[in-house]
Image (tube, rainbow, N blue to C red):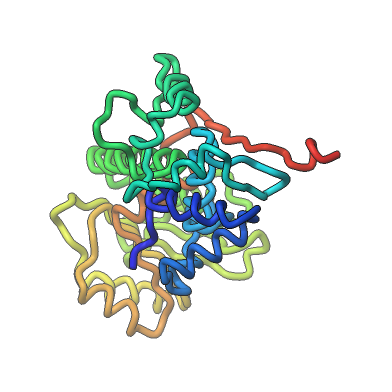
Length: 306
């Protein structure tokens, strides 16, 4: 089954806490068993790679139950049901969710605090449909949407530029990724022109120049694809240079035959299409910059136990 959302976990968490003081790590394991999650589902990580998705959603379920006064923290990473929580379990609803928690004054205060005009609301008091994502999942989804829009804009700028600018951009990206050795002047790495043998750029793979990376850059419109013939031509150019590896970058896309050809040829040829190029530009901040940094903080448990 799919990993349950954090609201689906609220009632099971409350019931588990009613059985006695529960450690959060044990709750995660017990709930994973009760929902029959596979090993892959249990191991699925958040984009940060620091926590599993299921554990994160369990912790948020605990946090929201705590905001409504249904569970309370007894000591570090341990929780138990409150008198109010036991009262709810006397005649439990089919499901506990944000709408259900809204009947409790403490939770109403929590919602109102989050809905202040100067804050970005995580839970909208005016919404009839409560969110199924945790607050940090909402933030990550928003980040993905922003990056998708940025990637589209980057490609639009690339398509409106010149082929020469695109070649320079590709070399600058590779340098930002750690290639190029001691390259400080990008223009010196550009070798494209008449008789270039299909090679647009050459940069050192490492600081010592023990090996070189040969680059082919094709700034094509979105609807124009790179076929197998272009890959074979690039292979021939690498062969003339006695090179063992190359990077073929395009602002458009590669056909299936092109991808298969690159895999079958006797040299290592990495293909980077438009969407992949845009993602790399965002990751290594080429053609874009950080506008604002949002910091997420959490309780320092050691501080309060010192």
